[in-house]
Amino acid sequence: MTGNETFRGELRQRMSGEILFDEPAGRHTSIGVGGPIDALLFPEDEEELTNVIGYLRRRQVPFLPVGNWTNLIVRDGGFRGALISLAHLSSLSLREEGKDGVLLLAGAGCPLSELVSLAMREALTGMEFCAGIPGSVGGAIRMNAGAYGGEIKDIVESVHLLDTSGGIRSAARDELPFAYRTLDLPAETIIIGAAIRLRRSETEKIAGRVREIIGMRKEKHPLEFRNAGSVFKNPRDCSAGRLIEEAGLKGIRTGDAQVSEKHANFIVNRGHATAAEILRLVALIQQRVLEKTGRTLETEVKIIGDP
Image (tube, rainbow, N blue to C red; front, side, top):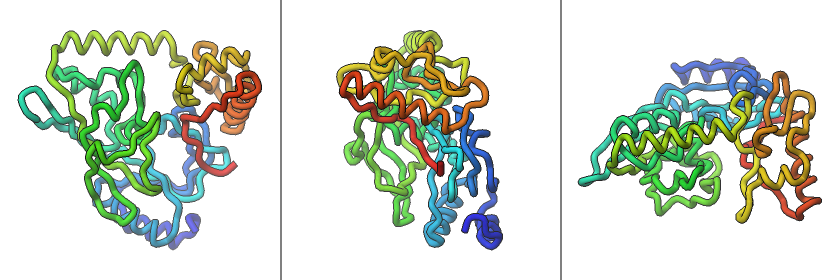
């Protein structure tokens, strides 16, 4: 259906934002792999997003939202349906809350780096653990992103949602079923924004912690190659990277896909890797770690699309 010219014409009538048909996902994913997406949509605002989602539901066209394309692997066969970029839902503002509290009001497409920078400028603490995370607000909330002792669930006040009925509502923190590296929302519910609670502190103390975390990321993570971030969730009592290294897989390579020599929980694209090569490494890691330790590694990256 998504290749039908009638469908494509109707989509164009419903959107002022950009639409790309048969667009290679590898041009967008942070790891640089993925086949053609039937329709890649860039709604300009919440109203346009709501309208186009309603249309896709009526036509029974599969769809998924995407943010900064990190933590995402699209298979080589591409995606049959529509991927909806929330990049233009990127508003960011501040609201005072009491004596020392401040709410950051951010659209789902706003990069985390902008929130970290704004928090530093305004001497607001709470966002430091997000320093160097390349994702967007929506993706970070959906995956309950965390590092260096912090998680998104610790600072979220409320989340703005487009639910499966097509209505927009806000859900308070205590209504949201956060768990380790996930927020368990109903399928096809889209995060369109969030309020994040921070508090006043000292600029230099905040900036020092941000510098420290970015320095640790540069030292430990393979930022010189394209990657999708941590591939596997850490088991409760140890790190996935350590288990992979103990299984003798650090540095192992399939084509241009390689288990990072710097951090074993990263798979890097050394130039022209395919999704199939990356996913062969994912499967090999899971098999070897299970054989050696009896532990099953669960992927943290989201894998979508056709083989």
